[in-house]
Each structure stands twice: as C-alpha cells, then as structure tokens.
Length: 143
Image 1 (tube, rainbow, N blue to C red):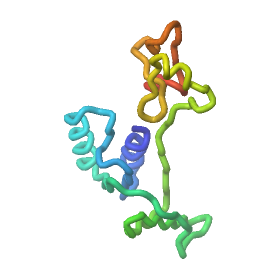
Image 2 (cartoon, rainbow, N blue to C red):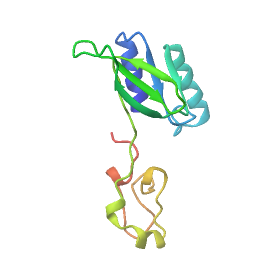
Image 3 (cartoon, rainbow, N blue to C red):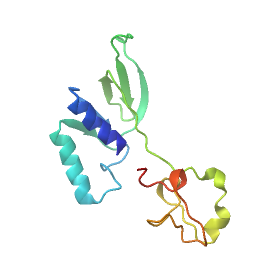
C-alpha cells in the first residue's frame, strides 16, 4: 500500500512518468477484488503505469549519471529495462517472530499467517490462553 500511496504522491507533485513494479499479479492483494479493480483503475486514470508479476534483476547507475543528474537503470528478471531518475523501493512488511520460538505455542493452536505475522482478532487476541500479540509480530494497521 505504501508504494501505491507514494506513486500517487509523486504523480500529483508533477513527476511526468511514474511506474509501479510489483511482484504480485494483483494491485493491493490484501483487498477484496472489487477494491483491487477500483485501485487499479484509479492508478491508471492518474497516469501511473503498472508492471505486475515482475522482479528486479539488478539496478545500476546509467551512463549519464552524475550527482546533479541521476540516471538509474533497472533490469527486470524478464529482461525488460527501465530507465529512471528516481527509484523508491517499498518492499512490504514481515512479522518479526523468528526470535520468539513459537513452535510450542503453534502446537497449542497459535497460528502464523501470511508474512510471518501472528494471527489475531480485532483485540489482538491469538486464541491461545492469555496470549495477545500487537505491533511488529501481529501486523495489521499501524495507525
């Protein structure tokens, strides 16, 4: 979501060309399909290009690159090459749970979901005894 927000901000601030490269085949996959379609249409209507199901193979300084005139070459795994003067990488969030040694609690019903986040209800309850989870291990809205 943060990458989509920044793309819209850059476009509104006057960037001539804004392109989103996403590893997913869906815009905002955490949303239901009707909201995904609306989001995709809004981005398209704003003039933002979408390249879906793509990964960066490498990024490098282009031949015209100077401190005053940035030139960035992005090569995608499928061989496509993008040239830009600004690059923002918004890679998403993952649960910070590896150091918590949750195997014992998983055997008691604790669930680890997508992105390694502990699954909780609206109150942060895990469904296991008196265990609640919030913040970096539970994901969700940060506001």
